[in-house]
Image (cartoon, rainbow, N blue to C red; front, side):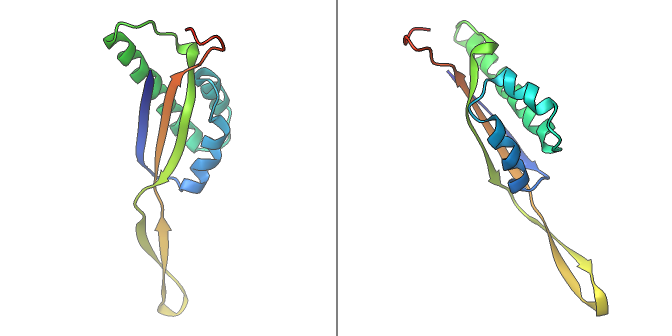
Length: 122
């Protein structure tokens, strides 16, 4: 079973968000949230919320399908950051000129799946 969650139009540059997302890819959901709790980057809180939302989505899917749900079995199968729309602003500069400022946004996506056991049985 897979569960997905997205945070769209997050006001952080995709490059900064990817630094955080790359550290948690492939880890267990609980382990990733614990690691993000102490990460110094500001976007770590947003990524942690997206993981929490994906766990909640997995719980709802398991209840709807009448399946067993164990949060410790969930692992981050996919985590990626796409670029959102860029807001364009202007800042005044010397001698009456103006310079364009690009305020970038991100779409953060996390997909959780159940950890595969070596024997093939769950």
